[in-house]
Length: 413
Image (cartoon, rainbow, N blue to C red):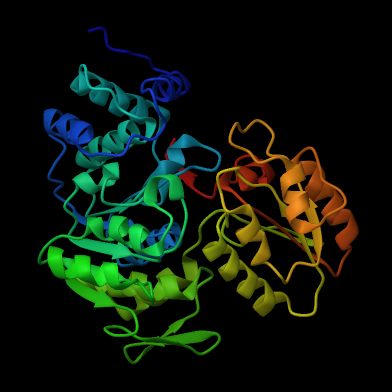
């Protein structure tokens, strides 16, 4: 069998996109087989596997920031990327070179032989290959979709984390929170910590926890936090409020405690202050104030709505929105009652995009826009100096408004 080879990252990504018959093909048999051939597991590092409907990225970012402030070397694998594929693997908060990614792809291509892999499976294996090469102290893996059958779940993590449970990707995970919970808890392992930041994880979650047998640490029962404005309290300790969601900060700190690596209070405090993540209430300009957020389902929209109300009470809010057709568009938009002016837009160049007319119908908006940029420009013009513009609806939406080179991750080149 002829294997693909190239020194170009763009060539490799094109190869990955066209390698398998479907973009998503849930199951672990193929990816496990290639991991065994490439001798990728077990990783020498301490590992955390982070699943959930929303909040995975910010939880990973806060754990990463705290560990780095504590002096540990850290690799984080996450998806999707916003601007540059290399965002998917951060080593000590920096991207690796294109050359290293190409070397990893070549190694996985050689190992897979006749086994077909999806884009995500291939990229996950390549990330594990790079982690094996660099030997960080800690590897943080963000689950791509679901958990039980996600490619990342070939790793037996030291600590599993479930941030939230709600409806998304229904065609793969089912149409009830119970079916979603069953998939999410599939990353747990017998006798190992499972930190759950979802306050209402469903009966199925607890039934599966009893069957699998992890050491369950559940918000509201085993860890309780209190919001005190600029500070918050967890287990009697007061911490600075992070720029990322507070519920995920509580989950992140609890997961790090379960991991067991020594961390000084100063490292935790500075890590919380410094933690950031592109596309999460990210400020793009200040006059007028323009923000972007990747919120793309009702659960995320409810949190976004609460933050907009908390931060900008009394100011007119202008919403620029473009979404994918397979999302709960009506439910997501209905959750954002703080927004008074709407600018529905087309997601140009994205095959799964919902027509702007569908968004306009759901919103009762008289006008829609051919591109996200055009909608943003109209919103900025209308907002003036007092208004706030929020651009949201998808990673694709946010990627179109980020200034070039602003993915927020350093490059090691």
